[in-house]
Length: 180
Image 1 (tube, rainbow, N blue to C red):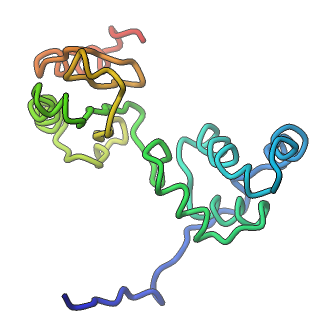
Image 2 (tube, one colour):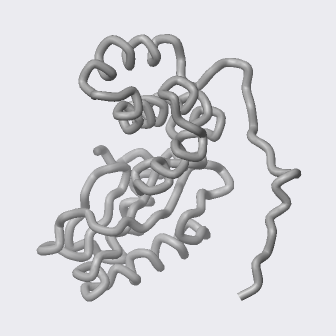
């Protein structure tokens, strides 16, 4: 296998003037979260969660800020954030369809669910619609193997879901008739 070098000299981190890790977040981390851990680094997951909860995702600048605050490199923060599926490293849509891809869901037809969403929204797994309203992802396991296939639509679990049901959920969410 040939190694292909990435042009790191042209890579850049988008920046904004105000920090993602706000003073209020730093204060809460210092007063409520850090005392629970033997080291500052122990607060990494809560810090990532705070930023994502506030901003909907975790930008590279935020990872640098979290790292500086906790005494970690941005690479260590990215390593942790990229390990967990629930952390978003790029903006997501206003609505998220997450289809389970565990072995139980695979045997029970998760591909038909994913394909129905792909066709309905015109996006591939991991993509967001051009209007920023919908994101499609697959997750490893949603813990509902006995009712496979399952999917989360805006964090609401739908068990024994069919392709037709997921299409209908998208339509209902689009027109505002679906309530979580």
